[in-house]
Amino acid sequence: HKLQLLDKILHKNSMAPFHIRAQAQRCTDYERWYQSDANYEINAARCYWAYEPWFIINTHLSRDASHRWNDQYVGRGLNKVERSYKLRHLCFDFVVLHDFFIIHAEKND
Image (cartoon, rainbow, N blue to C red; front, side, top):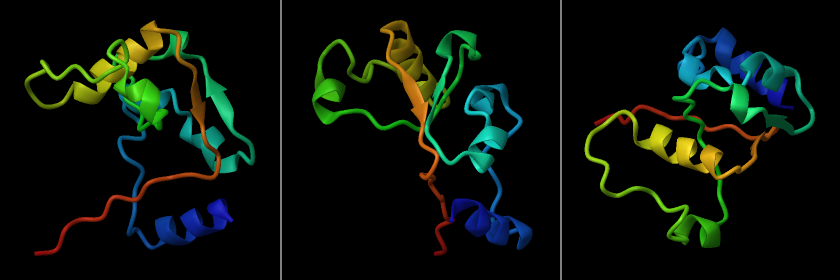
């Protein structure tokens, strides 16, 4: 179960949510996600302009020129924001998957 696994990891202080208090992540509503046993839709119109979710998109749609990543973007920091902003503008729905999460581990050299 997701909640039991996360509790176990969080209590060991070996993991922390990514920018949980940042406006760019707030629309995901982590407190709701922790307790949820069903997927839920985000009201993107109420999200901070720089909302930057990790998202899954159909490969065919992702490669379509009108939805493609802007490869003219140069820099670091707003690349994911740029794409999610564009998808929101194109009226894509953002759904939080209740039983899915990503763990990023540090690389030990």
